[in-house]
Length: 154
Image 1 (tube, rainbow, N blue to C red):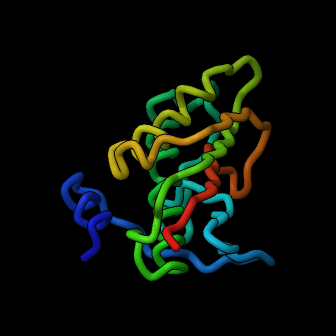
Image 2: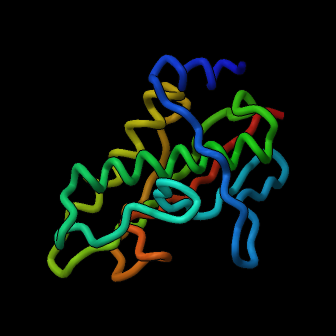
């Protein structure tokens, strides 16, 4: 097991099985020493996701859980693409999209779930630049979607 996977185990976290894209994109593109991770939704299994809108049926805590799940799916995609999560030098940028009801303005608090998890897993290497964006709708009715840019060890 890798050091990152040891850390995941210590946190009692498990990477989900990566889901094959159903549309025309790849989950991870590696260019030079950077990996670009496509948007990941909070899948509970191959068919279902945490769905709904924050501020209309979903509270901030459930949104944080969804954001954390997105990160685990992103890491699973990275592991498949890279062979080992130990190739990750640093999380550079995280962009979080939050399906938001009118008037909901707590997108940063929701995406903190993803940011805090990356810090728990990677320490200072998990600290990143970030955007938290409220949107009207997300694919599959997802409550949250997260994409990342990751610096890799050469």
